Every structure is written in structure tokens, then in C-alpha cells.
Length: 302
Image (cartoon, rainbow, N blue to C red):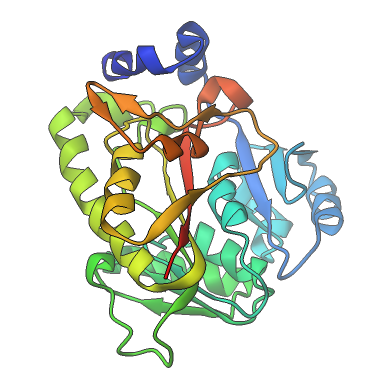
């Protein structure tokens, strides 16, 4: 738990935070509205003997009592996709409309990309990109199981994403769920911090800045870009967004979600960030009994 001590000044109840990080994470899933609505999905899961509780904050997010959610009838037929509860949040914050063109910059293995496809009514185009060829097979498998036909899968470094193979040259929305140091996944992966170093935090932040800048550049004026990570490090969160606010034409937007959260950090270890970063949200494990997450919403300006 040593690396997490650095965040003591940021967290309202550090003792509760530490205790939550040591508890195993519950099983959660997302209703795939391409194939079924929440009521039909809950009925199918209960018929399989799975205990189901609908999350208070969104009807498509379910908490399950089972050790093998992937072996259920509902999962096999694509009614439901196992997905950590707050991992469903970034796509819901982005909130694309049917027919929109959406960029998922770091899409594999496809949980958020298929969620975006559902949110656009499986119409329009969701470009699901990833630079890891091995992970793209999992993305394709999930897209097929969930019936997400609006997906176009691309294999590029998102920092230099090219429209060359596409029939359009800008997106309405973009999601950057960036590769990160994954500190917020400690409840699911207790060994996450064993090889943690501050050097890695700083090195991955450089990659994140490049990906988010390109996503902003690729999105039309008036469009939105959501940036998210599953880490607590301000260097990878507010520091990245602060860099992009200074480099690109965009501004922070408020996030309205019915979950307990903390505001974004505007000062960290002597570095000051843009005051508008208070509109970003930090979700700590003790707030909603979930993993940890950071989400920021940007609007692109002309």
C-alpha cells in the first residue's frame, strides 16, 4: 500500500480509503441495450440463479452475485457484458447520440467501445482503435457477441491517428480511456502496485498527453472529448488535461452524475493546474464501493 500514501493529502477519509482498497471488488456488469433492456436482462440473469441489484446511479449498471458472470445465458447471448461499475461511467458522460461519429482512442478489449455503439443505437460509426494488435482480437470477439455492428476497428498509435482509411475527417465525440498506472484497480488486482514506480507514472503521462491532444484535434468544434483513467495520480489525470487545455482549443465541462465523487485537483506537489479542473471528478473506492476512477469532459472550441 506504500505508493498510495502519496495521496493522503488529497483524500477526505484516508482510513476508509485504505480499508476499501483492501476489500475484494464485487462483480458488476452492463446491460447491452443493442440486444436487451434492463428488465429483460435482469429476468434472464435471475432465471440462471444469479442475484442482481440495479445500481442506483444508472439503470444499465448491474451488481451481480456470482463467481462466473461470463458463463450465464445472458452473457453468452450478449444481453450483458461484465464490466467494473465505474468503468461504465466515461461513455455515459460522453453521451453520444444515435448516428454520431465517435472515436474510442484506446478501445481494446472493447467494453467501452461496445457501450458507445449501444449509446448511438448501433447507428453512425464508432471507430474502435488500439495500438495493441493482440488485444484487438478480444475487441472483435466482444463486438460480435454483443451485436455491435457500428464498430470500425483500427490498429494505429492514437497519438498519430490518421483518417486516411475513413470516409470522413472529424468526429462528433471522442473517448480517451488512457493506458495508465492502474492504481484504482487494486481491489480487482491486488498485485497492481508491486512494480509501481514514480518514473512509470511520469513516462505514461507523456503518452497520455499525446493521445488526448490528438483526440481533441480529431473532434469537430462543439464536439466533446472525455478523458478517463483508473489511477489516482494527478500527473496522469489533471496534469494531462492541464497540458492539453494549454496546447489545444478546448475547455472543461461540468459532469453531472449521481455518484459520490471528489472534485479534480488544482494543485499537486507544488504544481498548479487550471482552476477549471475542479469540474473533473475523482471516484475513490470508499465513495461508492467501486474501483478508483478519474473522468474529465472537454468541449472542443473552433
